[in-house]
Image (cartoon, rainbow, N blue to C red; front, side, top):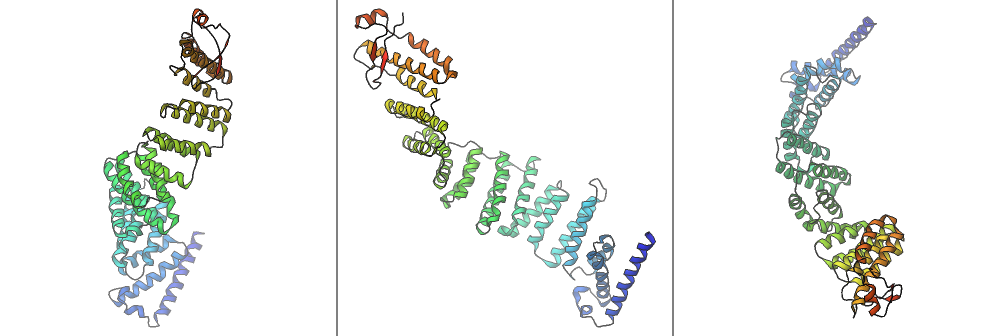
Length: 446
């Protein structure tokens, strides 16, 4: 079998040689072209070896193509770009098949790098080929990160916005590796991210398919935790100022600042509001309302609470938002009657929301000087107890909490004697005055 294969190979070489000799009988203009070699003999050898190796190459027989390719690579390096296209492919196929521990692997990687250098020397396009060179070095020898960094950074400086988006990610990932090895500082990473992010943003304006890679860069940067809220504001603030209606940018700002819990950032709030304007949602409106509350922007909080309630379709969630809004109205605006009305709305949205009754009870027990007499002032505690009892009947999980409050409030009930002198007795109906204005039952603490 081996003898037969050898005969076939020898026959192929003979045919190629005879074909070449026949062609040589006809005057070939390449023999006078200096790109094929310095002298006629070199040019003739270049053409012969090119013919030999490329036939093997086309058959996928890279092993037999290699010797002829090396001769062409050495004696007529500017004869054709195919020398480098094919050489890179053959070397990469060989590397892919080579074990990582092979002693000759590093030398082969160096040969691959040299092919790129020589291609640049004879055919230019330095920036374009450097990005390919750096990507290949990163694939085959990621531990050579300093060398990769030098190559890809030069490619970036030459290509600018023309640098392939995938290579932008590779450049950043290599610098992250160096940061992990303490070869780069957090400021290095932040500065590079700002530059690369701007590059991808400009590319995206011309080609929407770049968006996933821009998102990947953003997510990778956010995952590192190298930046503070102030750092991100410094990066995104100027961008947002120049494009205040850019919804995609707002989404990036919102996600990144949110990942660092920069909820007090004015930039975060601006981004959230723009996102809400673009795609309104109950959840985002509630978040904005909470931020406004924290900033004591009562008008803004009220506006977005109402938006959240209006947009919320789920009864249970709507009930909770209404109750949160009620608490805001009570504490920030001091409007207990409106707060109670909102709590009742919460119960209408979610009849199982016992916490709404507990909230009303709290409003009642916090009310002072509700009437003209001591008994009328004490009646607020009866009304509060009524609501705590209702709360635990609606939601049994509140029983312990409500019972503790009832026990505490009972100590503020009037005595039997005090009730008697007000011409009342235990069990009588009693209307609680002031804003509460509800019927309750007379009770005593003894």
